[in-house]
Each structure stands twice: as C-alpha cells, then as structure tokens.
Image 1 (spheres, rainbow, N blue to C red):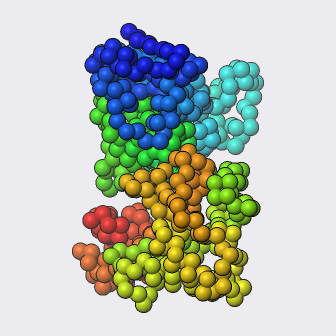
Image 2: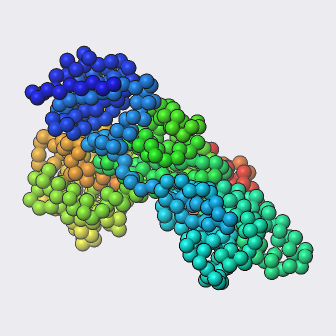
Length: 610
C-alpha cells in the first residue's frame, strides 16, 4: 500500500499528515524532480513523519525538509519487516541523506568440489555448484593465502578441471610435494578421500582433532621403524601448529563477526573481522558515505541492516557501539538467517581483546583515509576560504591539555601540513608547577616552551595555530605569543557547541569578536575537527602514560600470586615494566612458573580488567 502527495507550489504537510496511518511502514521523501532524498522506517508512520514538521530540527534535517516536495509511504505488517524494506530501498535508491554502504563485490569462499578427486579452490559468486563452501573470506588475498598454506599440509589438487583432465604426467606441484597427482593415478581414491577428510576437519576449525590423529600416526610409524613417514607427520604437525597460531581466535568457537566503528570529521570507518568455526579469516575496512556528522551507534545501525542483506549472517555479532535499535535488528537478521542472531557490545576475556583490536584497526584505517593528500589539500583550501585567509595555510599546529582532576597534566602539540599529519613534529609537554586544574596556566606554559624553542631556531613556524578552547584559552595563547614576539600568527580557538555535539563547534578567530559557525558538512570544519581530535588523542595518550608510570609498579605488586621472585623473573623476561605491560596472555604463559590462570590475572591487572 502506498500513499503519495505532491504539489507544484510546495509540500502541503498538514493535508498529507491527516491521511497517514499509525501502522508500521517505510516513508520516502522526494524532491521536486522526484529524486529520493531520504528513506526511513517507523513503528508508527503518522507519529514519526509528523515529528519532522512539529519540532525544531537540526541543520541537516532542516536542509533536507526544505527540499521535500512529496512523501511516499509503504505500510508493512511489522516494524522488523519495515526495517528490512528500508535497507533494501536504501541499497537500491541510494538517497543522499541516508548512510550509504558501498560494496559491490561478493566475498570469496574456499570451494571443495564434489568430484571423485575433489578440487580445492577459490570461488566467488553464486554457490550453485556441488561440494562444500568454506568462508566467507574478507579478500581474495586472504583466501589465496589460506589455500597456499593448505598446499603444504594436504596434497589436494587445486588445478582447474580442463588442466586436470588432460595430464599425462605429473606437473611441477607434484615434484615440489604440493599435490598427490590424482590426475595420473598416483594416489588411490581411498587415500585421497582420507586427505579430503583431513582438509575438511581443518576448514571446519577442528585442528585439534587433526593434530591428535597425526600424532597417533607419527607414533605408529615410528613404532614400525618407518622414520621417514614419521618425520613427514612431524613436519605436518609443526606446520599446522604455525597456521593455527595465525588463524585461530583463542577461546572462540563457531561463527561470529566483529564490527567496530570509528567516526571523525564527517567520515567513518567500519572494520569487520570474520570468525568462522573459531578461525580468524581476516578483516576488511568499509567507509560508508555519511550525510553529516554521525555517532558510531547510528553508523553501525545503518551499516548492519544494509551489510547483511545479501550475506550469510553468523550466530553472533560483536559491535564496538550498540545501536539503539539492536533488538529490532536482531529480529530482522534472525528472520533473514533462519536462526537466532545476537548483537552484543559487552564482552569479556578474549572477545574483549579482539573487539579492542577491531576498534584500533578502524581508527588507523580512518586516520589513513583522512590523511590522504588530495583530501587534505581540498580541506586546506576550504579552510582558507572559510576563514578569509589571504593564503592557504601550509602548516597548522594545534594545542590541547589533558589531566585528571588536575593531576599529571600533559599538553600536546600536533602538526599538519599539506600531506596530512606530520608525526615527526608532534611534541608533548609535562606541565609542572601550577595549581591543579589551571588550564589557562597550562596553555601559557606550553606556548612559552614551544615558541621559545622556535625563536631559537628549533623547528618551523606554523601558518595557523589552533587552540582547543574558547575565548579564554585563545586570549591566553595570544598573550604568550606576543611576549615572545610572534605578533603576526593567526590563532583560531575551537569551542564546543551548546550541547557539545560534533558539528556545532564555535570558532573564534584572533582579531574577530563574533564566533564563526560552519555548516556540519563543511570540509573546512571536518579538517578542524580532525586536527582537534588528533591533538586530543595525543594529549590524553601522553597523560595516561604519565599516570600509568606511577601506578604500574604498584599494580604488579597487588596481583595475587606474584611475589618478589616472580616479579623479578617477569621483569627480566620482558625487559622491564613497559615490555611486561604490552605482553599478551600467551606471552606471559611462556615464562617459567606462570600458569594460564595467573597469566590472565596479570594481563587483567595491567589492562584494568580485573
């Protein structure tokens, strides 16, 4: 069922809203040319659509509603059905005000054919052939790497059928012990079937069973004095162990995906880690198109619905930020997959470790994307225009101060040039001798120390100085610079908006009284946000390191079961507290006298998990 209203003189919202139903469904907002601006779903269509015309809206929504010339609705039976339809429409219509997920490639699988002598190979596309499929893998390279490793363990053919059927003698793969040459009958169907069963065990994540089988066969071969055969089993066990170290997620079993989102400066990255049958198949980064600054839970909510439309849905999905509609997404995905699907963000132990790793990967991938040279130049030019500067700033410095209740204060300076972050020029300053919590004094001290060095020729003077703060911080930095003779530097203060949401920052330019507020989709604002966020990250990292240095020793002493001798042994093994704090559970277990349980306690103690 669909309802539409359109008016050549403008959208008559009151007449349209009077006709709307209170049932669940999907609504589509169109502009004057019939192009879809936005697709949304609602549990109550009338209440949801009315909200656009009966309350104050943010800048992004105001811009969208001003273009609306028509609204179409489709009524559904349930909210979950509406969510599924919404994601299908977003994928097909690609509205400009929705979060858009772009990924037009199907994922590769490993395919074990159903032939008498099955072939093991890479497969992409519809899984219409016989045999078994294992995956999906995040990329072709990850699939090929797994196939390459399996060639060392299992002598299964990987050649195409037309090559296989026309052999009269073994190929080079047989000569280098990467194939058992079934093409020329050098292995029986029965023996080949045993290798197929072993490969299937490995791909099903049952490596332990396979190892136990090979250990038994090695012992039997040695007992029969067949030492060469025993040595081959020994090498296979060693190779399998090395592969498992690279591919297995400790403590996991079954299928799950791990999704982590990082959003900054009008861009977002979603990292997806693929775990199948307890094996880590790798990860892939996605960069959804955002209509404006959005928080990670909102990005993940939109991403989850679109991403799994045409993909296998695992039993469990771990997320860095829980979407507000997680329960509804679980219903939709469970219906689509034919089994129960859980979405979780609160996890412990090994799962917490892997979720943190996914978050780090998302942050690094987004940072690399934002640092792209073409994007930085475009944003620098936009910043020049927005601030009314005579020349494009080629070097920008930003200052931020971090502390906890005034303790262990650290100030940070980050530098950006036309190529993005210039990390070799980053500097941190430990702030001392001030009243705890004196942010103005800390800003004055860092400016004095930094620009005293620049005046003495140690470094390069920037074209623009960003100060994370409002008028007070800006005035303090300006006075400190004037005392040192830097009178012509351009300063820009960045103050958070009324409700502290990104996209509402107030900018105070030195010499100008009124604050400048840029639109949320401004490339200049995105650059300022990126530099400000990087300064904040660098400052808070330095503060935490300084705070942690004073606590690490006491942390080790407070762990139950770690006495003086074990402390000394641990410190010697890892070369000090810093190395010990970076060690994982597996690394700690390698130290003599450290059980897995104690290793977990030590790891938890250093990472605040106990």
